[in-house]
Image (cartoon, rainbow, N blue to C red):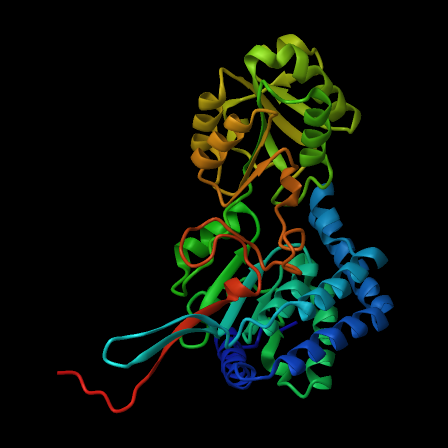
Length: 423
């Protein structure tokens, strides 16, 4: 951690220079070297497990003293299973096809020119995130596979964990004879470092923010570097009148309660009014039994005395906790309108046995991820077969939804001729 006397702008510029130099070498690294770095980093995570968990214990104490909620502490916590999941994620990334250098399209022009659109790395990627130390491994690994250098700035609460994980990533790079500066973390808790990252247009090609509303708002407001925008996860589960009651209960309870602190957790539940008597009691029972506080509109309150009144703010709140808001809607059009008004274009689901209703929901809900008869908790790059993700992009330019290896590349045009000149 930096001391108060250290010059943060100077420190960040040096990190940027080292990242840019490392990326120039990484951009042309063969797949075998990148994959070796990933698998050796996975092995190092396993070897260093006790050290990583010891450092995480320091962060947990810091988080408790800071007053983090139970769900936020769960995001911060590492255990043997989560360290193994990080290692397995790196190995899964290694198994993915290398996108760099692949031909996306090619064609010939009448004048004999041959044109090829080819994948290339984005360059240097800055990732700003909160709480979850596993992002250090996921983001570093994905950027590496796509030929990008990365500058990772985790939250102050995960400082020790992220630093320990970085040691394993650097072990992998060293074993593969790749520049260790290809993956760097910001060695300070000082928030001024975030402000510097957002201005580093000479060194960083894109910023990926992952965190709460205040972080995202700050990044959007201050950044001069292009963003993969990851807004809050105001996710909805809509239970259509044609839903199977047992399926609806299982899917919705999982969507809310499997892990309440992730961005894919459902925050609002919508149920068709005409079928509420058949569908809602089982869902409410499942939620309450799982320890969830249910807030509802007047109609939902009348159906169950355990439901407390919802305020207008509840429909626009990402709880990241064992709290959910439930509302009755008139029909699928009413549900779609509600999602369009209160959602964040992240992840929304419909539970229904009506194929036409499902297709209407898919076509008219303009979110990065739309699910049919499945939990919103599947909003995850690993579950999509991407090995891991660097975040969920809710924007529409370049990348949308889970940002994996392919989304961390751009392309260039290669034009081959035989001496043509333009008349």
